[in-house]
Amino acid sequence: MSDEGAEDDEGVERRSFTITSALHGERLDRALAQLVPEFSRSYLQQLVEAGAVQLAGRPATKASAKVKAGDAGEIELKPTPQSQAFRPEDIALDVVHEDEHLLVIDKPAGLVVHPAPGNWSGTLLNALLGRDPRAAALPRAGIVHRLDKDTSGLMVVARTRAAMDRLVQMIAAREVAREYLALAHRPWEGAPVRHVDAPIGRDPRNRLRMAVVDLQRHPGKAASTTLELIENADAGCWVRAKLHTGRTHQIRVHMAHIGHPLVGDELYGGAPAAGLTRQALHAYRLAFAHPATGVSLAFHARPPGDLLQALAAWRLRYNEIEWPPGQPPRA
Image (cartoon, rainbow, N blue to C red; front, top):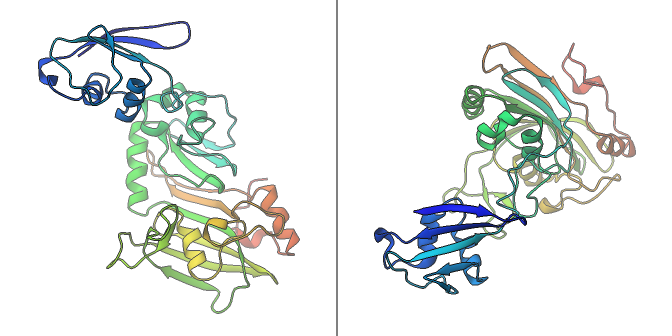
C-alpha cells in the first residue's frame, strides 16, 4: 500500500509506495490505481508519461511497464482541475427558503450545478460548500436534482443526509411538483393544453444531444410533460410546462419534438430572438412535502430580467395569470 506523503511549497504531494506481492507482474498504471485510489487511472498514466513517477530508483516512463513485488517508488501528485473541483468558494446565492433540513434557491442562468470538464470551479456545488462546511459531509453537497447551466429558477438542496435520502425518494416517486415557464418559436396551434408522452434517450446521430427515441431500436426512458399555452405572439408562444418525469433536457426535447424549440436553444433547433441568446426556460414553481415535517411547501420565482425583456419585446404579458390564486411571485 502507499506510504506517507509530503507536500512541498507549490502544493505538489510526493508520496512513496511499495509494490505488494498481490501487484507483482501488474502494469504500472494498474498498480498505481490500486495504491493511489483517489486519482483516476488516466490521470496516473499522464503522470507516468510526464516523468513524475520513480520506480526502483529510476524514472518510470511507460504506464505498461510490469512491476515487481518489493519495488519501492515515489509519485508526484500534482493538483489538477478535477482534483480541486470540490472546494468551497464564496459565491452568492439567492436563497428563497432555509431551515435546518434544506435550502431552496433561485439559480441564475449561467450557473453550472456540478463541476465538470470546462467548469471545474464556480459551480453551485462550490457555492454550497463555501456557504456551509457541513455540506462537505453530503454526497454532491446535498444537490438532489439539477437545472441546465442556462436554465434559471428554483432548486431544492438538502442540508442533512436524512433530508437528502427522503428528497431523492420523493423525486423518484414523482412527489415533487416542478413547473417551468418557456418562450418558444412559432405560435401555438390547437388545444391549449397538450400532454407529451415521448421517451427520451441519447440522440443516435449526435451524442451531445438528447432526442425522442424509439425504445425498440434505441436505449431511453419514458418521459412525460404537460404543456399549457399562456399566450401567443406573432413569432412564438409563452408556455407553462409541468414535468412528470425528470429526464435530461426533457422540456427542451419535448418542445422541439412538437415543433416549438425554445428561443435561444440552438442545440435543439432554437435561435436567438427577442434579445435572448440563452435558452428561454425558467423553473418558476417548486412544491413538495417537507422531508422532515411533512408540511406542504410551495415556492415561486419571478423570471429574470432577460426573460422579462424578451416577453416585452414580443408584446407578451407577464402578470398574475402565471401564478396560482393567493400565491404571488417573489418581488
